[in-house]
Structures are given as C-alpha cells and as structure tokens.
Length: 459
Ligand SMILES: O=c1[nH]cnc2c1ncn2[C@@H]1O[C@H](COP(=O)(O)OP(=O)(O)O)[C@@H](O)[C@H]1O
Ligand SMILES: [Ca+2]
Image (cartoon, rainbow, N blue to C red; front, side, top):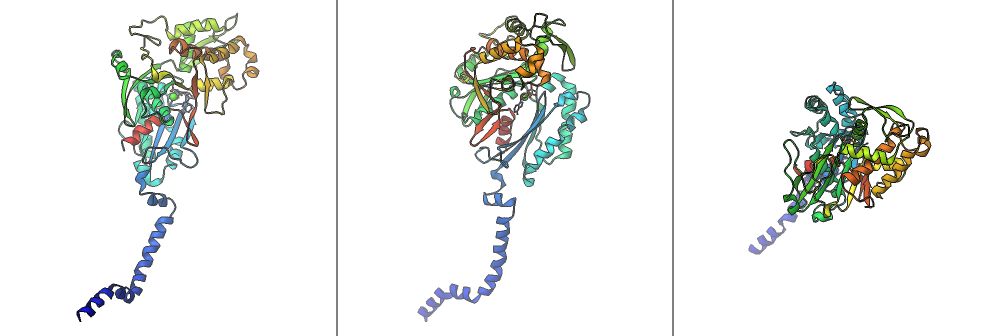
C-alpha cells in the first residue's frame, strides 16, 4: 500500500499533465501568440530583444553657429559608443543663415529651426522622444549680438521646443555657449572619435576650430602646468577646465577669441586700413564688406595685393606685438598660450581651415581629413594675392564668387593665425579635419558631439 502510494505519487505529475493536456493547450496557445507578436512587431522588437529601450540613448544637439544653424542627432549604446541611425552614425542637417541674422525678430529667428527640428525629432523612435535630451548651443553670432537681443531669441527657441516637440528640454538646454565650453566640447568630440579619451594627456590631440565669428584652441596640459595658469581677469573665462573622461582626469587649456573667426577677422583686417585701400584685397576689386550690421570699405590698393603687406596688417589686427603679455608666453592679444607640451604636438584643425584649403585646391574635399603644413596656406596665399580679380574664377574654380575678393586675405590670415598667433612652426604637420572616421563611418568634427556625450552621461 505504501509502495503503491509512493509510485502513485511519483506518477501523479505526468498523469496530471496527461489528464489536463486539453486545458494546458488552451492556456499556452495565447501565451505563445502574444510572445510572437511582441518579438515580431516592428519598432518594439529591437528593444524587447535587447533588454529594454534603456540600452539606447539618443541626443539632439542644435549648433546655432554665426553663419548657419545645424542639427545633429546621435544614438549611443550602453557603453556610450555611437551606433548607427539608419545608415549613418549621426543625422546631420544644416541651413543658412544663423539665428543672429534676425536680431529684431526673435520669433522668425526661432522659426528658422522648424525644419531641422521636425526632421531631427522624426529620426528618434517615438517612445524615446520624451527621454531624449535636446540642446541648443549658440556660438559667436549670438555672443556678438549682446545680452538682450540674444536672450529674446533664445526665449523664442525655448517656446518653439515646448510647443512643437516632445523631446526633453533640461534646464539650461537652450543657451549661448561660452567660448571655453565650445572649445572643450570640440576637444572631447575629436578625442572621442579618435578613441584617445582615457589615455594619458600627452596621447590626446589638440584642436583649433576656426568658425565665422570666433576661433578656439584647446589641448590637454599636465597638472603641474595647470597650476601655473594665470588667473583670468574679471569677466574672463578661466584658462583651464578640469574634466573626468573615461576614468581619467584631464586639465584642458582652452581659450576662445571672439571677433577672430574668419568672417569677423575680415572686418578686423579692414578696420586696420580704415576706409582706404587694403593690401589684402585681391587686385582690381573695389567694394564693401558687410559683417554684423556694419559695412567696411574693401578696396584693393593700386599696386595690387601683397602677401608681405597683408601679413603686416593681419599682425596688427591680431595685436600680436601691440598688446602686453603679462604671462610667460602669449598667443595674441595678451592671452596666455597654455605652455605647450605633449597635448599640443598633434593638432587637429577644423572648420574654415579645412574649407578654405579645399577651395584653394590644396586638399581633396572628398576626403574627411588632410595632412598639411601652415606653409601650404602661405603658398596658396601667394597665388591668390598675385592674381587679378578677373582671373579668380579660372584660377580658383572651387571658391564661391562672393569669397574671391577675400581669398588673399583669408589665406594670409589663416597662416598668420597659426604661425604668429598660435606659435606653430610653418613646417609643422597639422591635420585639417572635416570629419573623423569612427569604425566604418565618418562623423562631423564639430562641438555638438561633445555636448551630446555630456548630455547622455548624466541620464
Ligand atoms: O558640423 C559641422 N561640420 C562641418 N563644418 C562645420 C560644422 N559646423 C561648422 N562648420 C564650419 O564652420 C564654419 C562657420 O562656423 P560657424 O557658423 O559655426 O561660426 P561660429 O562657430 O564662429 O559661430 C562653416 O562655414 C563650416 O565650415
Ligand atoms: Ca562653429
């Protein structure tokens, strides 16, 4: 009896299954069906299979530059590596002019971002939009407009984001970036893409970013050098930023020079000759240059343009020798040079440096990077300064017509900025950069990626 009961108990589970198999089938069919639907449903399947939507983080960053507005959408995995959206590693769209082109109409200024906003938002999966940070960083254009006008525009942009998008706007998401923020984000972008973050400071690369309104230089320095940094004057940004990235502390020397972006520097160079002829203007041209609401006389001298004469004017505009250097060593305008060192030995030079070099014909515009020397800018300048305006279209077919009168000026300025301003040797090799290869893809070498990394790191 005991043995029989034991056997009976032993058999009872399979007996029960057999007895209730009809009922079990009825219960299991809907479970199997529901599981199938979840796994196969488009859109949600990805997240269901990869352990929830938390594993992917998107960020939408607007670059409200002085000469145009751009939007970048990035997607990161849980290791903070970039993963492709569609076929590319970022969505990148741009338009002209920038927000500062509408100084008296904040609403119209903000509305100029609508098409970029709509397309950016469309590229983020619907269920992730409320979790996806959106930032708008304005640079030199709004900096130069002054506080009230720029604040009105930013307020209109905040309202646009609130009314039109479901993306997450954190406090301070819509701001004018200060120059050191812009420069340090640019440094993070390039070093992130080169995978040098986390390595000793002397293995990182330095960056120069020549925008339309301002130019930034940033490179990592040693802790000892950082301690010797001069204190900023009142109202000025400090020279050194401390940053923790990939488990390492960096001391980043960074400085932004407002009014020394390429388009702003043209105005500074024309101001030196104050209403008379200027040796930087291409031979035979007589016109006006407009920048930031002011018109400057831009007329070639009767003897024509000259590299040597133009360099003298550029040095004056940069105040290389005219300003007092109270620090150990200065770049220009009395600004500390950061002391140099390992973090500055490889320089990645972006924006207008790449563009003008490509237009002048000494780098290939279809490649993301090019290795050149500052002397290449001087060589191209000699050709541009020796031509007549009528020869421009045939000698420099890639240069836009509006830029031709200023080609000698632009190239001389770029050479002077690198060599006399930043103290690079004319023969030093530098990397001109438009995009940086990251795995199979190439990503824009611009500050918004650095901002996106900061935004998703704090999520
Ligand atoms: O995302 C980018 N990818 C490539 N080039 C860029 C990007 N953002 C800016 N640039 C370059 O910078 C130039 C103008 O800079 P911008 O308008 O940003 O001035 P700013 O930085 O002084 O405000 C553009 O003509 C372009 O060459
Ligand atoms: Ca810029």
